[in-house]
Image (cartoon, rainbow, N blue to C red; front, side):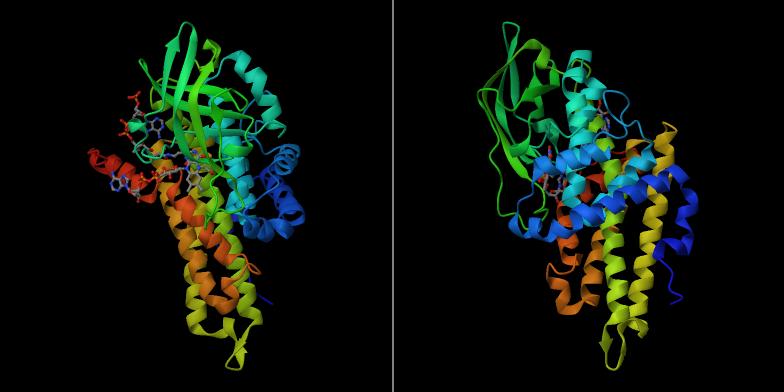
Length: 389
Ligand code: TGC
Ligand code: FAD
């Protein structure tokens, strides 16, 4: 037929280099071949083969792919974003695995770690042999990480950590946790190997969202660490928040992947489905939904690419990342829900990806800064007034 892909409406491809298109094609092909056939089962079972997946993604080269050295690919920001987009087109849980590994755990060690810490952890994490997690949120401190209670105190030259982290992606499968704790000198980061006495990571079950992703708690009960477990380069809340900028950037692209997958599914379903004697796609009401969704998808993609180019120029600000995260996740979840209506009853099953994406996006709306937090960041930028507290 003469139908065009939504991205072709604004010729998105013309904004990508040949190398970027190649990376996107490679990740998409791997996703279709190795991940999509299993993802509904992983979601339904609430379990993923995390180690195998980490190795597969490590071979693909997407773990810490935007970092330099230590076995990392050193790719550009847009290439990294496109990899996130293609993984999240399969499932937000897979993009989460990559975000937490590369943009949070590895980035923290890369940006703030000592040379020894980088050499010890990064090559294995880039290869997917070692899994990392990032513990900032606590049971009583999510949007306001400054109110964290987890504490690290000195005992001679050692550190002793006490506290609890909650809602931590990859917690129970991690080999290493980057844990943020309050100290006499402000918030500091610690590299905690999973086997350390006093450290445990029970899994959180019964999620209705992001079921193809491992989530857990981190319990720190008198965890003794040597002096060199602390990340020397991070002081204060700007340490963890600096990592969040990286992961949020990946989500700006990733959310577009989930939305694209929903819209592609709805377009093909509407073309094939006959209602009242004609194709569902031929009705004006359906076309209005499809047109509105395609317009929002394209606007979100253009925004992601603009932020990607700014990041490549080293000019991307946290407020700009908030604009992208707020808009693209909010529009992606709206698209997923609208696509669900087009699929009728078929939309509520795991035979189609749309409600799985919509459910996943509930987590994406909340983690990495809720939509309300990003609204307030933008509000502060616009008015100069901080309204967080
Ligand atoms: P505020 O006083 O504004 O700032 C404290 C210090 O931090 C600096 N800062 C930043 N630095 C880098 N990047 C940013 N985006 C930054 N935002 C602030 C700031 O300059 C200051 O530095 P300094 O040197 O003066 O001390 O902080 P606040 O306490 O008022 O809070 C601001 C707020 C609410 C925006 C912030 O706390 C926030 O972003 N809250 C949301 C927390 C969040 O996003 N948590 C996510 C946890 S990780 C996660 O969800 C992983 S899921 C991943 C997956 O599975 O894919
Ligand atoms: P709260 O902060 O209690 O917020 C509750 C509601 O209040 C929200 O709607 C919020 O927007 C609103 N609110 C908060 N402050 C204000 C305000 N000032 N004005 C108006 N409204 C406000 N964290 C990690 O550290 N590492 C991880 O790997 C990780 N993975 C996650 C995986 C999943 C599946 C999920 C669901 C969460 C994960 N998180 C992780 C935690 C996530 O970052 C937090 O859930 C998030 O930051 C929000 O914190 P909270 O849940 O405590 O909600």
